[in-house]
Image (cartoon, rainbow, N blue to C red):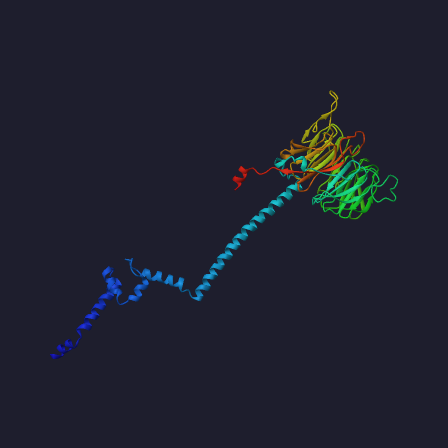
Amino acid sequence: MSSPFFMKKKENPKFAKKGKNTAVLKRKADGDSGGKSKLRAKKPNSKHNEEISSDSETESPVVPRKRQSKEEIDYEETPQEKKLRLAKLYLEQLKEEEEDKAEEDSFETDLIAGRLQEDVLEQKGKLQRLIAKDLMPPDASEIRVLRGHKLPITCLVISSDDKFIFSAAKDCSIIKWDVETGKKLHTMPGGRKGTEDRHVGHTAHILCMAISSDGKFLATGDVNKLIMIWEAETCKHLYKFTGHKGPVSGLSFRKGTHDLYSASHDRSIKVWNVDENAYVETLFGHQDAITGLDSLSRECCVTAGGRDRSVRVWKIAEESQLVFHGHEGSIDCIQLINEEHMITGADDGSVSLWSVNKKKPLCTVKQAHGRHGDAGLEQPHWVASVAALQNSDTVASGSHNSQVQLWKCGQNYRGLQPLFSVPVSGFINSLKFSSSGQFLVAGVGQEHRLGRWWRLKEAKNGIYVIPLKRKPPNPEEAKLTE
């Protein structure tokens, strides 16, 4: 009977109460959401609760524990976690670089595709860059004049890199000019009549010249039926071609090759291989003296037939020709704009645009340079030279009315509108655009290149370098672009 009492007495009341309260606190800390219970639970675990710092929280303390783990990662990052984080940043950087590179590659691909498309259009003869609308006339002070020939300039060419001009004249000389400085680099002097056997060069009026597209060879033709081949860089004489039975009036290298086409007053076209120093073949068809010739990349050339009033397209490989008619007078000059379109000028004062697919001109401007003479006896100024900026809508013509006229070709070359004129006194015997379209060069003389029946005493022989200025961009258009 005493044992139960003894055991009850043996129990420590203070310890039992404490254990009971601890159990209660534990239950309330696990499940009770009351603020009072939380305050009681904070006492035995003050350090833990201070780190949680959940004074404003009324929900379960589990959430603050998760936030604590994030803060620990931020401020107490392990070496392995740091490596992982840097690896992720590196991968993101690589991804951004690859995306940027892909954008650049796409841009370059678009550029290449554009160039390829232009090449295809160029080969088809359908490329027409619209630049005429941006051109404006230069100031007179901006036109440079190069003087060095003693007699009228008859012909000239510009190297494909636009660095050099080669000119020839009735004094039988050839001069190489530096475009940038305007200085003479070389002079191949002409010889007197009767010195053909001992003189290296021309001894008669030079009527035409051509330079290969790679700038290696220069060809010149004269009244004595001779064709001379020169090394363009050094102006060293290389070969002499003979075979024509009349003055050589036209020369052109096929673009990208050293095949040379020549035309003559003997009404024939001859083909030469300059690399092999060899004659290839002769083509016939014109009924009068040929006055001009031109060619581009295709194995064909175009010619102006003078007083037979025909333009002909010669397909060299097929040994065939296409015949076109349209001018009322002698067709004195011709130039290809692209593989399928060309411009001609005649002594009836007209300028015409042609397509190789049409037998008649696409358009003709009559009295392109006006008229001259007494009242009732006026005659048109005949067109002595034409030029075309290749694969564009810009062409030019020259006469003896003291003006070089620039023209804008209409869409598909079905129109010709005057742009502006540049004052140049004398016979405009030769015109050439630079490959870049930055300038136009005119070879001017007191006389026409083919005769002396009319002399302009007030004119001076020279080479006029005419800058082709562009209009400044429209501020409104620039804002829209931005």
